[in-house]
Length: 473
Image (cartoon, rainbow, N blue to C red; front, side, top):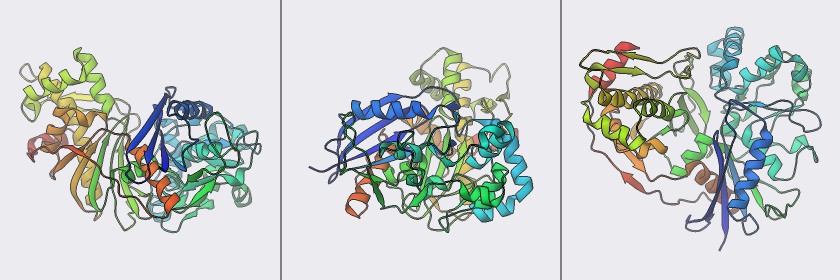
């Protein structure tokens, strides 16, 4: 039996899934936690990956592996392959002013034309500008810039401070397309934008090592074996992917499918054959991991909105869902605009959450529970509208993430979205997609492993929910 493995190095933890190459069946899994925070020492990710691999029984019998990882994080390396400072993650908003400055310098239209993006605090290019302005002594040491999955792939192959071959850094177009200095339609880095970010001249920017972009089915070999993890000389390491592109692969998403993911962040993304450019910056024109495109809208406030309201009401998530279903659609006029952590879409990094429509009649536990779910989903439904406004087809919503398994979330989603909603079985879809990519690299053909649906709530669109939310925007 041939085996492949997929990794999901997310904000909160590292997961490893080992799958049968032929059927896609899960053979074994492993997991390890990540430390909290919006700036993290990448060595913590490496330690977690090693622990998760061991928890999954090692890689000695695995033929290929792929690494999916949280997008945008800035891993700055010096000439000796050492991490210069803690990596700023996608949800670190200290680079918001840098995003504004870069947009003003280059122009939103020009940024969108050259990269498919308009800078917001999440993207790597803004974090590099922040580094240049806030820590110029660290910026001067930058010899290479990688993303979390790039750096982990490099370490997995046996590179690092003890073997600092920076030219062996590799990535894929999905993750590179989230940096803000890469053109997904040409597979080329934009060194001028990199120079602007770091405040250096063209020669200095040209000397910075950026990961080589591999094709979807391409792979690279392990350089140094490791008996502790089972990494061995015959193991192939695929290009890897950004987390959302990995999830799209794992779900088998095709044109017409829109994935709505409710995790630490909320995302709405669709697979399309044509690149997308949105000069407003609402939709990020990412590439996918299969060779086409993945226009995406992201929100900072997703599952933790439910965590917060459940804690406020003193209930668990199941009880929160039951309370929500006691209330009528629209929550009797109670509207929660859930910007608890600022917001990325719309781009309001300093915003706070607001509860509207409080009356003696509307302010009940049930209405508050329902308003939390409706508010979270309305932000994501706005994202679906933004993607479709750019000509992308959306005929079905695949609702994923831990919160999607809550019956109330699925039923309210069928009232908020105006297209059918289906809920795939709970699974580690980013790790699944990384394993799909590993199998693709091993055999030269993308596997079509089955995805099981566990819920298909009846379409029940209730316009009042979104009308109230829009009125309070």
